[in-house]
Image (cartoon, rainbow, N blue to C red; front, side, top):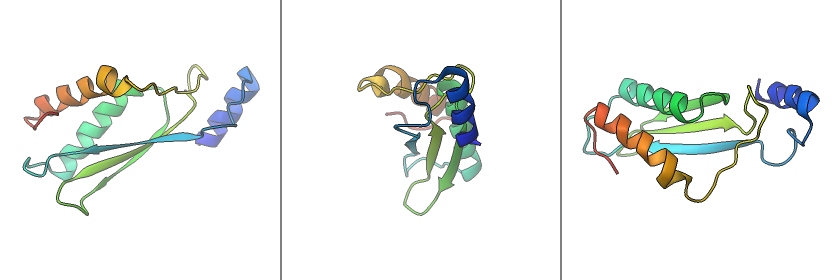
Length: 113
């Protein structure tokens, strides 16, 4: 699916959609002292993706192989609506990502960063 989106956007817009970085990987970790269930982790991860990367194709998995639950998110480097490639900037975590995560953690009564 992600490759077909890249090819479609390449045909529509050009600009090397099928070259360079093909995707991104984020990990969301939940504090071990919080009582996070796999269902809760799924809900928080889905809400994060809808808020931060709504127009990017995503897949994610919740893992419990450590003392704390965590989610791995993989998303397409090409926006399926605009055709633009995602560009991560050094301060995006502080400016854009942490506020979303903190808001969601507060909503669920979890520890914040």
